[in-house]
Length: 387
View 1: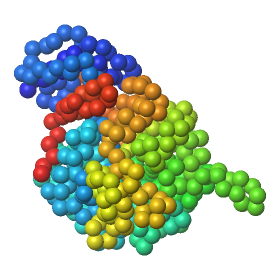
View 2 (view 1 turned 90 degrees about the vertical axis):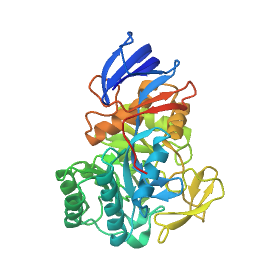
View 3 (view 1 turned 180 degrees about the vertical axis):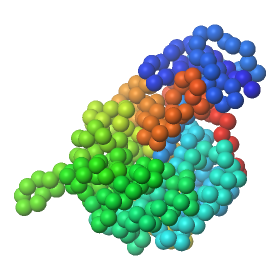
View 4 (view 1 turned 120 degrees about the horizontal axis):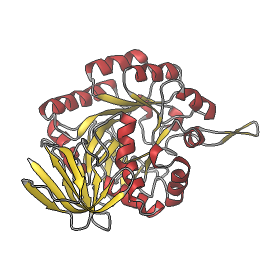
């Protein structure tokens, strides 16, 4: 089936093409230009922006559900909820939990992917449990453990869709863990880490290259015997080799810090993420949990963000991707090429997905039409999330 999107401001990797047409057939873009080709279906963008579908590399759940205990049907509901907000590709993200609970979540995701191979859920991101107790945040301290290459190998063998893993590289075995993960084809991320600048520099030589939610769950500058020592925050900003993911919800990172990170790293090294948990989409005042319903930590929705009951820490995010996209636009200005890179192309490049993240010939036609307020008018994709 041939489809044409007309009257669009097409956001490519280098420019915005005004009043252009984009055509695709069987889910692959095959025309970008001024003409309107013959087609089976015509979509009028009415002057809106045509951008690549959002790619979320860090999403735990939403609309009252999380991957840690979701049924097959509920996995589809999470994917459908986020697709309505522009996420056409995602990594289902776990967190520190018991081995049995993690295995249960992975088994359910495996069953879902087998039943729905065309889903927006491309794979899994293991956010721990190989994390630092000193930077636990809203992760469950009781289930954190030292990195174990054998454990990672076993999980990857049984669940080949594990595409990303987060660990604290400074822990015993952490550097070998990073090297082995990279050899297995897993994108390795310093996560909930108490590493200092030097340890993060070493991590770059040992397989790690993507900082998990910069500023959150990591150490900044500290003092030792009166001497200042840089932390993971400074390493992530300093080393060009590091990609950084950021929760651009205006809460975890206020707009001044979003501008600061953007000025230093640029759109080619930043991936926007939601880090959404089950609280995402729920009303103010809702009390729920991060993690499984049975063993998760309690959180409360307050001020548009999920917090631990002590109010001394955020607990994941309650934002959808369209919200973080608009918040980043408010922070840096409406540079649509840069915004689209951070939301789509840079995440795709991090993961090595050559056919995603860009409006160009031969690329997958996962597309969004945004109005002039950057709100989603239409999601265009042949991905189907089974409910």
